[in-house]
Image (cartoon, rainbow, N blue to C red; front, side, top):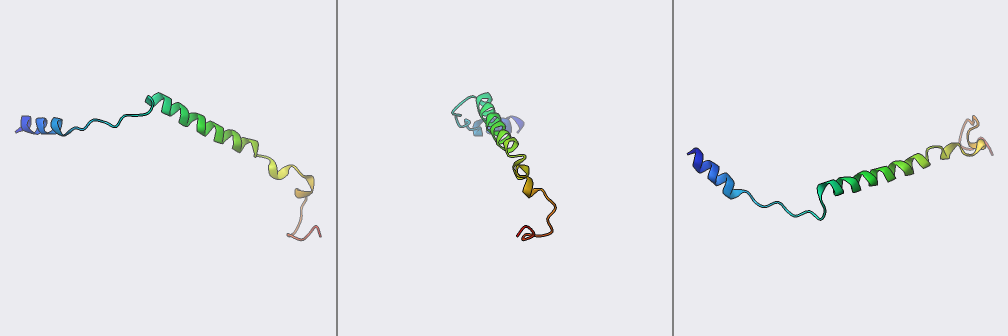
Length: 65
C-alpha cells in the first residue's frame, strides 16, 4: 500500500511553471525596487520643516491671517 501511495504521489507531481529569470535575479530586482522606495522616502523626510513660517507655534488654521 505504501508503494502504491508513493507511486501515486510521484505520478501526480506537475512540472513547475517556468520563470522569466533565475530566482536570485528576481530577488535582486525586488531589493532594488524597495531600495528606490526607501531613497524616495528619505528624500522627503524634512519637507514639512523647510519653511520657517510653518514651524512657528500657531493656534489654528487661520492664526496667520
